[in-house]
Length: 368
Image (cartoon, rainbow, N blue to C red):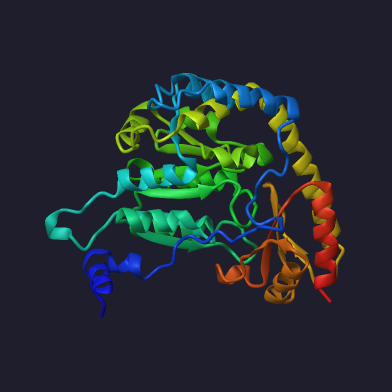
């Protein structure tokens, strides 16, 4: 064993050594339909105005108070009166903050017990990874075969594991469906004062359904969102809200200056023009429904209902179709290996009419 191998073996956690890093494929030269991004740019006059705004950002100082950005988010994005938000470098950092804050260590005589983060599976991969890195145990509860939430299994797992955190993506990624409101309410009630329910609303601009306004009803509820899917993936900004006393505890874990001044300036500018982004989301919703109807006409293709900006479909041979699409320079996501319920499933981000047409023609040819 080399010196460097020995060094890594002696210093880096074995569970970290055993996994791969989060992989982002190179999309150069491809029609990129794998990451649920908004394909639309801001209109040129707004990009020019944004450039001027960014030119005035003070780059030689640490970011000042985030008060103005928080106020804009609360005003424009439906945060209840009297509630604040905590900002993160994307929702990934918020998930990590929640896990670190809730990774309660058991007493010395109970060292075999660790705090639990629980979530339906398949779901967003960072729930499990953040639990691992924070020193929590992750418990995944499989969805039903029709991809709906197995509420009985969820409640049984809560009783058995007493999780500190339960993540519920609303809509869920990669399935695209909204879990039942009554099921989520039952989970919140089952957690009581021993667990926190985190409703992850990354795709709220498309679902147009939210638990944000219900925060005053549930003291053990956190609502988390990102502006990435709305059309601002490049600035990396997430936010979450909860009962003020609870949010104050998570604030202690947030790294200082975690949101940079360019992100802050760009986000404040975008929120001044939120109507433009909402109009783009409406276009994508219409395109999603149209593409779903087209795909459903193809033999052997199952299209699952979606309230996000992507579609999950099942085909006879997902690996073959995925490989053929790559030859057409179309990049989607092959999720067939994520979980048994996703066998032969592919996930397609909805894009512009032009890119959707290219995808559909390439996809149809790839079924042969």
